[in-house]
Image (cartoon, rainbow, N blue to C red; front, side, top):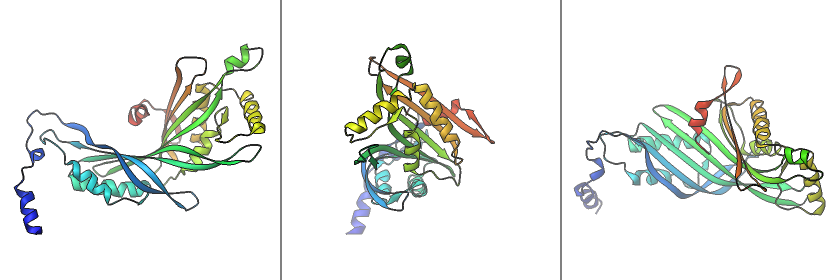
Length: 288
């Protein structure tokens, strides 16, 4: 039965392997929006089950008509319910690259990561979700890994506070940070989220009682920040970690008195022992 099946497969035409004569190489081709179960290891050594969305791509030479889409999924399925980290992602990309016969492969694994938060005064415990992404690229023998986290924060406008007789407008924002560590550097998701939360006018909490609301209102009023302030403060915090070699920050405020959002980017790269502005990093990380 197996021989008949193999013979049938051999006899079926494989158009994607045919020659293409247009002379156009493909930068990325693959599959996206795959629902996939993975485990993530916490800082405290626990493994938590996460629902992930996965995007997988490879390059394609100019002379090949198409890639083999099923091989992306076949390789990925061998890693279902696996505890993902930077080195597991490298192993997966290595297997995928070999399976496809490609020169480079790329993966994005996005998942919700939940952390317990305690209200500042009432100490009520609730759970908050953060969007996180593992990004990996394997090109020839060079592997790069990036961690991206999206952290909601609150900001209070310094200009509004300065010019008003009382009160000041505030809004919710999202700080998106993408980091690339040194070869032996490690940064935990929990630590990165906590560091970023501290740089807004105030952090967010899922559950707040009245004493907590009073605390949040007063703390944010005494800590007004523009998107530029938040981006710069997050940048200084990341530079002090000692484990990073490149990062990108995007701060976006959903303005409460304007019909637009306020957005700010900072990209920095470590050259020698000094941090420099990096225009290449902005292109490298993309608009995320």
